[in-house]
Length: 447
Image (cartoon, rainbow, N blue to C red):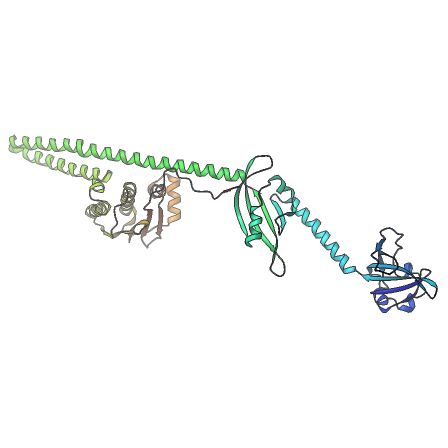
């Protein structure tokens, strides 16, 4: 604390602190005008304020001055001036405190605050800072445009927890319903105590509405796709019945007539009639096999396990490829059972056409929540991404259609293969079928 005693505005005495602040020695300061030696300009009573007097002390005034040191540096002084009488002569005692660092800190805070305000003004999201009571002490213009509730900041203060990207349905000042995405974090002091919160709000009304519309559209599309699968299977059922009942009966009747004609015909016609009867019997067998593949009655009478074992046996007899079925499952729903049958059917067709495999394994497994099906072969394998891309581009719907059928029913398909290492198809279905038009919850709370 620098002390100057002045007579007729000239320094008569000063302490060592005055010399340290100014850079001049006390000898150099004494005899000089206080305003020339210390303060860069007189206060001219502008900004001068009455200092709070202590009991029994003469009144004093307080002002700030700028000091230019010997080195040319500028210092800020907080001065108190008191008039006294010393040896019957009037003197002025001036006490100066160096507040340069304090003023520089204030200036830095002001600049930071101005910069913060500029940054907040340019942000497209609403930002607010609250005190411990939840009252907003700093906010930008975007927050005023998308005003919403402060429940998140209050929770951050009370629970000492941060909230991130939470959707809140609000009613703005204009009465318009809006959805905001709110993120909040508590502000803590050096002691770890919560003293406020910072809150960021972004209006996402249009985005949320678009997502809801997309979800509803996806639900309707899934419902339609499931319905198309049902209709497709009904058409297969009808066609299988026509082949088995009508065309199969026609072939059987024709065979009986030929057998009767063979009994009455001469020896010259016997060979031709026998060959015709054999061809008709073979056609009847193929018709029955085709009808079973279109809509295997075994699915409805014997279940999925037995149907897949029948399909594997048929495949092995026709192609010579060893086809093994392992594992068992409880009876799934009709749509899942049909989907599993179609997956195996398509996989075996692909093995025959492309894999050049010697053996195929069909594996079944079931847990409390899911049914899992795998079809593996020891064939040539293929590059999965490029094959799927070519299939989709060329309109070949084997694997692509298989994946769509599985996903429509809420299942998942995984294809593992590489050239020279065989192929593995793994399918997983939820045992509880998804609702036809269910729309996933979007997690929006309502204010």
